[in-house]
Structures are given as structure tokens and as C-alpha cells.
Picture 1: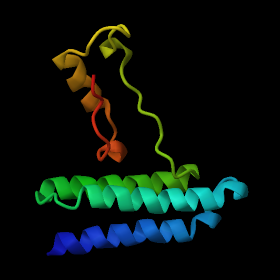
Picture 2: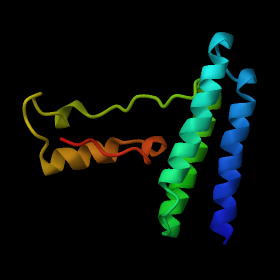
Picture 3: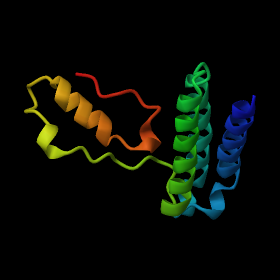
Length: 121
């Protein structure tokens, strides 16, 4: 039951960030668009992960949400930052990813993108 309280608290914090986004935004002309992005992204990801019951996974997703909130405030943009994939694991454009390459890409994926689907080839 305590996990539910934590999840609802971080969800509430994300929605509060959307409401207060004007004081964090770097450019005032995009505030409304960014507010809507924060709201819709929060709803989408929390709904997507609502059936997770493993406490460790729930904690990982809570950490992901908190990280995204802090990064949005720090960098003054609600959009996730790009992932830096090690160049040594990237195959030629026409080739399929091998098991080791997929594992390396997965390991290089930051916590703030955990809820996004893995790269598929």
C-alpha cells in the first residue's frame, strides 16, 4: 500500500510541474505546448505502467519519474535528453543487431527513459 502512496505522490508532483511550468520554462512562447506535453506524457506513462506489481520495478519507475522531473527543472525543458549509445555497438545500417549489441544498447539507456520501448530491429 505504501508504494501506491509513493506512486500517487510522484504523479501529483509531475502534474504540479505542468501547472507551474511557466516559472521553469526557458522560452515563454512555448509554455502552453510544454505544459500539455508534461500532462499528456505523465498520463501516458503512468497508465502504461499501472499493472506493474513488482516492488523493485515500481521503485525503478518512481526513480525514472523523479529523474525526469528534476532534469526538466534543471535543463528548463520537459523533453527527454538524447541517449548516447556507444558507437562500438552500432552495426552498419543494413545489418540487424546482434544479442550483445542489443544488450549494450539496453545497458546504455538512462533511467529517465526506462518506460520507453526498447529499440527493435
